[in-house]
Image (cartoon, rainbow over all chains, first blue to last red; front, side, top):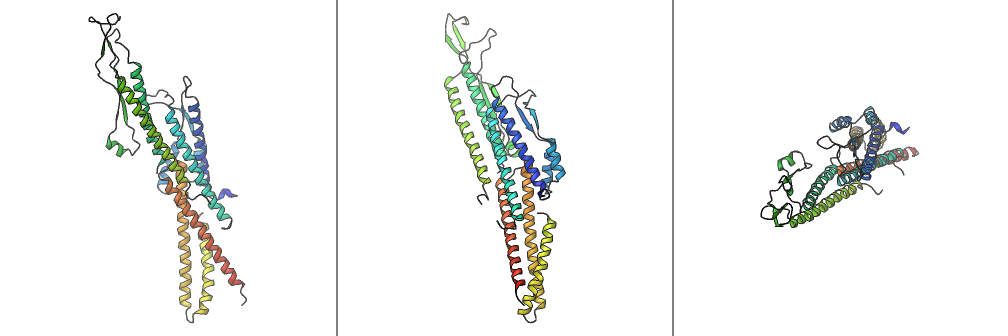
Length: 130
Length: 138
Length: 112
């Protein structure tokens, strides 16, 4: 029954959380295989719909459920990382760790936003009383 | 604060310092090489990182410096070894002109700069985490 | 919160406010039906304005959350501050509504 209440924000936040955890798995795999011979690091790529959604939000218009569903369906692709010449790049440990730190902060920010949103809804549901 | 840019900036700084250390260790490894049969001697490399202020302003703070490796034109180090197979007519062998002291100083300063970049990144991360505690605790 | 729900709430509140305030002030002031009507209308418009402000704040924080989920993080502390402000404003509105309802029920319970 709670699906009707602000479903778009919850759906978009959970999609972003899925993307962040997938990105973490890719980074962890790269770090674990840093010393392996012939290993090609993978990275998670954004879909083009993110750009479209970003533009829409910049104009002040909220996303629709269909948009969020389409973005979640397309699901982040993992592709091999290539350097400037198109050849597979090597694993650079410090940039992997920097990406991991960034991803962790992003994950925590998403979680915090989701919990604030839920607490607002719960205060509405419980009539302002505990 | 856009924390994604903060991480990217520190990451590019760390990459540059790591490149500097790699080049210094490459120079040190080739410190005692002689000229080959084709007469070409190892020229110590130098990392040149260029960044233009207008580019930085235009692209925002995350503009990466342009890093290039350029060979220095150091004169060869001549050592008197008459019995050496590569000695010239006067008995001198020309070794690569690698200044060990300079390379060591480069490595140490690159490591300090690397640590400073790591400290900057850690600070940015804890600032973002502290910002997340706004409104918490109830 | 959707604008339709808040609009319905504000209409309900204004309909409660006007009849409850008008008889009180009609008995206290001798010839003041005109004054009581404008006071009632002033209060309900105040309530509606407050509700619209809170609604605007909530919509802005929803937009911020969706920006965050798409990955557009311009200003993290600004987002958190606005989220907390909208939450507090909403809770304040809830408390105001509870007090109003209580006072209305108190008045209704009075023996005539």
